[in-house]
Length: 288
Image (tube, rainbow, N blue to C red):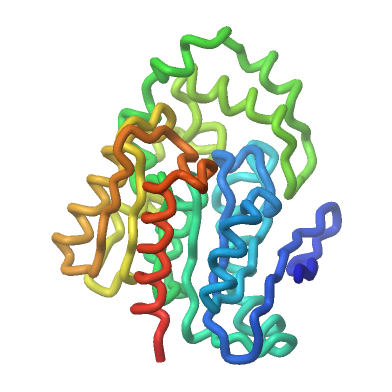
C-alpha cells in the first residue's frame, strides 16, 4: 500500500515521496527517478519493480526532487540530501525503518545522483545504478549526440517553450524536448548546472562521481545495456573499473543487446535475472 508524504516544503514548491512500507525493522530502498534532471517524477518507478522489492522484504521510498533548468544541480543535490535525512529522521519515526540498512537505487540520472551521494557524508550502505553515469564531464555529454541529432533539431527558444521559470518537482514528458535540445547541442552540463564546462571545470568536479571515489565508497552494483543509445555503456564500464581500482566492492551486469530503460521490459528473462541479482546484492549489503 502506498502513502504519499511531502518531505520538503518550499514557498513555491512542495516535494513529495511515495512510501511502500513493509514493516518495522525492514531495510530501505530510496529510489531516484530518471529524466536527465529535466523531466520525470517519483511515479516512474514501475509497479512490477515495486512489487519485486517489497516482496523481497524491502521498504521502498520513491522521491521527487526539483527539476532543471529552473533549479540547478547544486540545489537538486540539496533536495536529495534532504530526502535522505527525512527518511532517517521523520519517516523513521512513523514507519520504524532500519535506516542503518539503506540503499539508493537510481535509473539513468537517478543512477548518477545515487553514485554522487556515495561520495558525500550522507552516503548509503549500498548503491544500485541502472544505466547511470559517473562522468558528466566526458565528451559524450560535451559533443552533439549522433543519436539525438537524427531527430528534428531544436534551438534554445524552441526548447524553452517546454519548461518554465519557477521551481517544479514533477515534470511532464513534453519537457523531454529541452533535454533533446541539450543533447543535440552538447550543452546539458551548462544548462543543468549553470556552470561552464570548460571555465568552471574545477567547481564541476565536485559533482562528478568518478573524480571523487575513495576506498570508503559504498558497495555498488551497475547494470547497463550494451546497446544504450542515450547513456553509453562505457559509462558503467568506466565506473566499474575505477571502483575496482579503489578496492570498492562492485559488480557490473551487462544486458546484452539492450537499449536505455531496458528495465521497462520487466518480463524479459534477462531483465528478470538482472533483478534477481539486484535482490541478492541488496540482501548481502543491507544485512545486520
